[in-house]
Length: 172
Length: 85
Image (cartoon, rainbow over all chains, first blue to last red; front, side):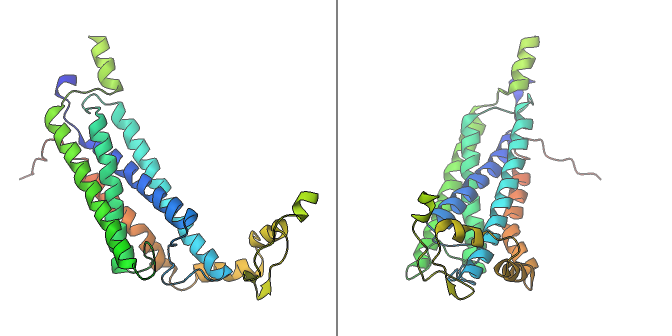
């Protein structure tokens, strides 16, 4: 069984969720809190007074809560994948999936929140479209690089290397 | 306590109910973190009032879409499902 491990999807689905968590926390911590370029509703409710700031803070908190939940689910899936012999335990697949997840976050968040709904922009002001497009392009780049890693590893590696695969070999 | 009184004040441009906050950091922090003061009541009303469910959907939909993508990718490497006649 360990010699024919093919279920790459178990690692990919966990990695995509964890990558989304990484991208979401990077956005929330760096762009919302440290640089304070935007908040969740800052284009609709500019944080120019205390009440508006606190309302934006609430929605930022909810965004972080969703990001945290996504990360927890990703961790659970990764833990479960590690215990199954049919899952190829590959660093390239995992890192590629993280990149896909982070990129997908940028693409989905950028298209829905920035372009479609316009609730906030990456860096509001004169060049906001350029920042938004850059955010989307970075996402597309991450998805394509990640997908390349996953595809390449899928063709190359079919051996199970997880905890369960090692245990199976030890019992032979 | 000597150190606290020597701390810098907020700029006068930051206001709370129209009053300039020219207190030291500790007192200002206590006011900002109030759980049930007039400011918090206004904030709660603004958050939970009209548009709450719309904004909740806006915040949640990107994560739901990525969850769906993750579920789709879970099938990579699995044999195709057999179609029932």
